[in-house]
Image 1: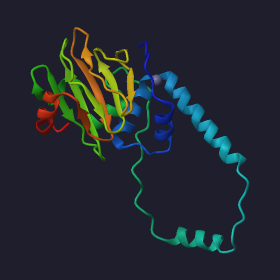
Image 2 (image 1 turned 90 degrees about the vertical axis):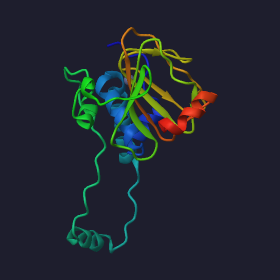
Image 3 (image 1 turned 120 degrees about the horizontal axis):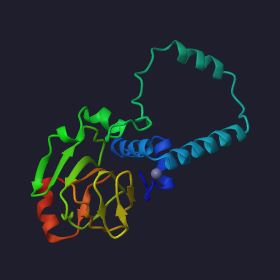
Image 4 (image 1 turned 45 degrees about the horizontal axis):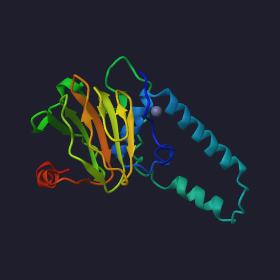
Length: 218
Ligand SMILES: [Zn+2]
């Protein structure tokens, strides 16, 4: 796999800080499971974060800190927070492991919902604001031109597409902010399947896009 498009520094930092939506964290975890380069960058960020902590000067503590700590240890345990999806090394499956955990089936078993001829989608059950979905687009089809109100992460799982930024094939991730308007066109001779997450609804710029948006929900 020859990955040419990687995650932004800011996206990796937000992922490490646990501040991404669940859908966007899933895209990041899937890319990390496919991309040794970004795994190395994520590890380097963690190391920098750790050394910054070590350099911090110890703060003065008031006398009741120890008592408060002991009181907290006695109180009933809070429910464990939901852990971010941990990137696992890629197995033989074509499906990135973190996505496999969510889907519970292979890509050919996904109950796709057709929007128009050649374009279908499947919403993932991890929506915490924004959109988290799989898109399946036939060769030669393009998505409607759109911009975003927030960030959009697109990870290619099968096939390829090209847009104003470049060509994206399996493992490539398009990490876009609201400045970018693009219209992806599928240029592979098989269906292009992508995992997409946004932290706000897409804004379609064409009249047709605005007409179908209330129907498709994005
Ligand atoms: Zn990468």
